[in-house]
Length: 428
Image (cartoon, rainbow, N blue to C red; front, side):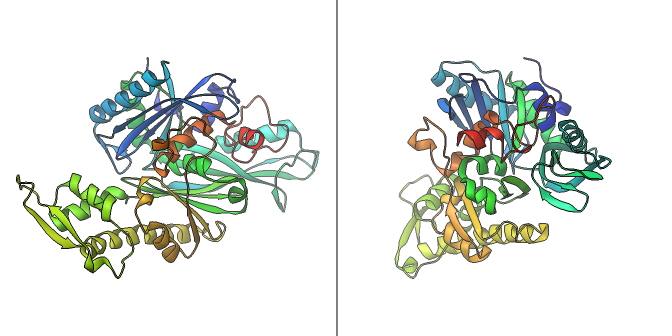
């Protein structure tokens, strides 16, 4: 199938191509491209997405959320998609794809029009929203999301639906999320090599938030921290909308690399040690427990060194602390730390490390819970954990009306930007 030009991959262009609501019974496909795994979910549209096929594969050619080897990542994508197709008994052509790196351009911009003191109509709403969607950043950045987060009339702000009201100027605040254009082109090229088309790109904290958050969290303010293998992504939701997104270039793979270097053990054994014995918080019992560490280059399995567990913890804890300190600094610098309130939802595969939730609470000074995908039918036990939140959220995004990109020909009957999508408001 022909490869879609990169310039067409953004929320607004996708809205013009895809019907605002997916027909019941149609297929939707999520493709989560991470630094450590590629995951494909094929689902059928019902009241909630029902999983038909699942495929996941070790990611090759991805580093820090960016594609560094098209051939390697293309092979991983084809393998994951083929497994999902075989399980579903269906063949897919289009996918909704995650973006976990290179999107550190999150800003609020204002678009406004003159309404000359008359009543604001649907036509005015379309006009101001279209003006907001047309806003673009630098040439080397690609718009991924354009999300209306609030309307204002003259000096009155915080208006949800200004239709029927009167004033001089109607304005909308748009949350614009951009990514490096080269990163977008590489994702599109890799998927094109797999004979698939990109319906939409979704930054991973947005997708993870759709899967993990409850309505009150989205309304009152919450920070989603999606801890992946190569990156940790951040999303702030408030009043039902994504209002901030960012990424820090540290993830679970960095912890594994630290263990491998610190204990002179192969990466595979370092990952196993992290999963079985690792912790982000020290315990008084750590010195009493000894763990066996296979050494690099030793062919004899019996030739291992024995170290106290406290040494392993002393390697892990600083890297996890650094990650949350970077997250805290990004939130404070953005000005959205207070808006997000005291609620944090951790998700992603790397959040499953023992002690991560407690350490996050200490460093961020917030209430923390672990988020798992919800509102998805047919998820197997093995794919119901935090590592699959972004993939599940992509399905919910695909089903929604996509609040940031309403179809230009129509407006929702109640509330222009809906609460993270009109479908989510009506069906959850």
